[in-house]
Image 1 (cartoon, rainbow, N blue to C red):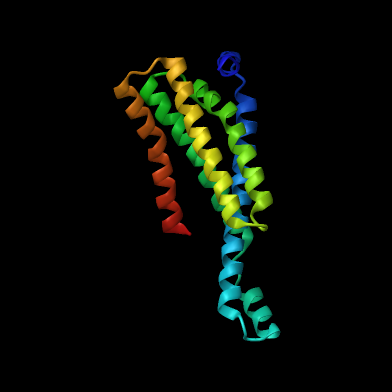
Image 2: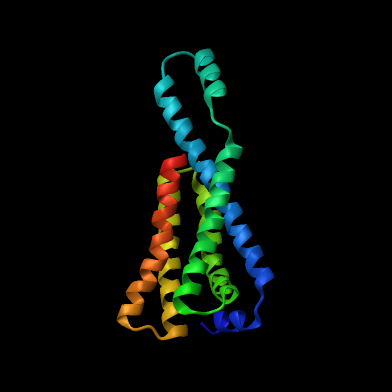
Length: 180
């Protein structure tokens, strides 16, 4: 907790942007691998028994571009961090840059989770999702504890802060469903 307080007080916005950029790049890579893994599994199930040549032609001609998935993952991740920072800025009436700096040290947890998830996605996609889910829950827990320690929240404020964080997640899931 003292590390986060020191980090916020130093106002290292450029480092926060770099950490958030790395997190977003890794999310874009994970999303690309996730979509490729789903497509590959679905196409293998669909094309099983049709012959090597026909399955090769079908998978190479109908596979969506990975760059599209990467860009979607990257943009959605960046939007998420900027929206959460904006909501915290409006709710806590603190500087936007200070709120953005608050998220950056916590993003290191997501970086670790995304790296592990990317490494394990081809070995076991279920294990990869479990790793990412557990580290996301840890991220939310530490985020919540950080807000509680830094701003001494009451019960009403705790509930609102939780909704502030869950709102963008729901918005991003809706965007993913609509555009992908």
